Amino acid sequence: MANANNENIFDVIDEIRTYLQDKILTNQELLKYLDGKSGSPLSLPDYTMDEAWSLVGDTGCIFFNPLSERTTIEQKTLLLCLFEINSSKRDYVTVTLFFIIMVNNEINELDNGSSRLLKICRSIDDTFKKNKSNKWLGEISLNQFRQITAPSGYQGMELSYKLTGFNW
Image 1 (tube, one colour):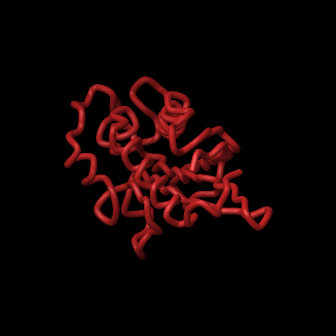
Image 2 (image 1 turned 90 degrees about the vertical axis):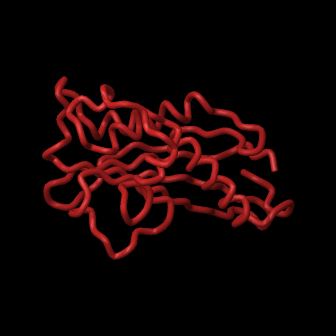
């Protein structure tokens, strides 16, 4: 729960979105699993920041904003970040962060037999375990992990995290 009187919640969400972009685009393991170019993604060289940003938006597989008309059929992997804001009282809000992950069945199995989809989920979760507390963000905890219905030929998961204990 956060006191919403101190700052406009949408400004805070924009700060959270910026924080997430930084964490996702600097997570080399996550980027390699999302790129989908190799059955042994961790053997790929690290991404430069420009290469990481090339994976974002209409030309990539990472979406920090709502999807355009483009469909997942054009992508082998997809990571969508969404927010939900609930106000239980006049002055307090709860923010839930959602990650929707989809992986094409053709590339889901890695060379070592592991699931690319589950490795992506683990990489996202590891990012938050390493960064559970932030001076302005507060506490981040896994709220839900569930399989979702994905388009034909894809597997999908949804991870949600509660952002609590805000320091703003």
